[in-house]
Length: 191
Image (cartoon, rainbow, N blue to C red; front, side, top):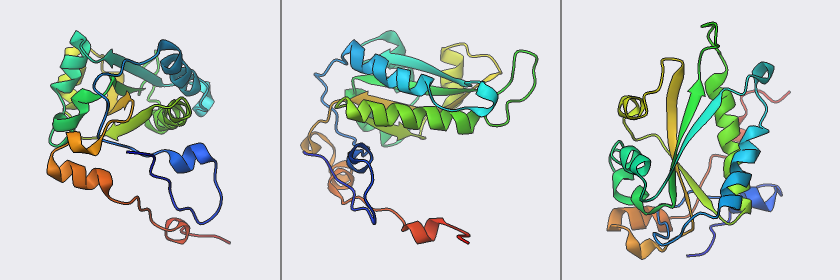
């Protein structure tokens, strides 16, 4: 399967218009360390409130014990396809400072870091898929995360596979055209 380019209402960076979230991953692919490091370097340089940098990641390569722990916490359809990815990454927000003060923007800042990571990974020829279907408490317990660390999402990283490797319902979703709400639908006020 080739890239699924977005039909945009105005030109945007090709890395953004070509980025999409597949479910079919090449189960033989091993992540090149330099490409993975570049993706996390992009996350590192994301903006954050007061430069708190409240993002942490659990990176687990396919075949590792950590990968198995994360894969075991996935729910629904995610459990059916995500195991073929080269890596599973848990995106964690640091929600309190060392003195216990809440970091109100932590999850927002983590989202920015993951977005930067996703775009950089795509520019390196890798694909990322964000998931919300997982047991956060199970992951927190498995990795002994403290109360100041909140598991927010899990993502896959790897090379694109083929839709035929997926169950029929997932294959249909994989082959469906991309769609988004219009810019006009997204903007509440535009004075």
